[in-house]
Image (cartoon, rainbow, N blue to C red; front, side):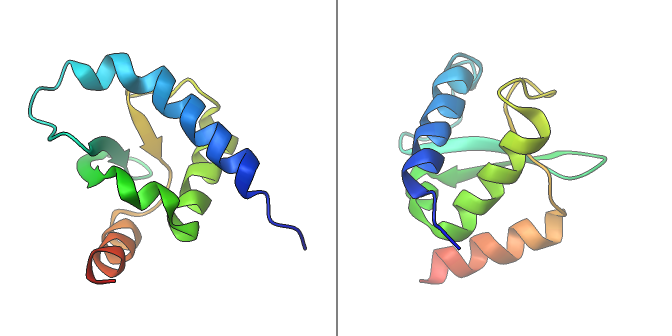
Length: 97
């Protein structure tokens, strides 16, 4: 049971570098935040702090996104393949910690 954090962090940087052009178009994203699209069928846009990227639970979601979409996300932005309720629960816990 190994932990691949350096690889995950490198992959997260690649995802965000690839998606940087599309997120720059949205001027309503505050500095230090990133837009992500969440959902399995209908996708909803969320804006989350970049600091969430360091949390192991969020890194797990990024790993799932990489496995499912690679670096070509269907919405043009970072798409996270999980249920909206689960994402809201996770980000709520990250916000309070």
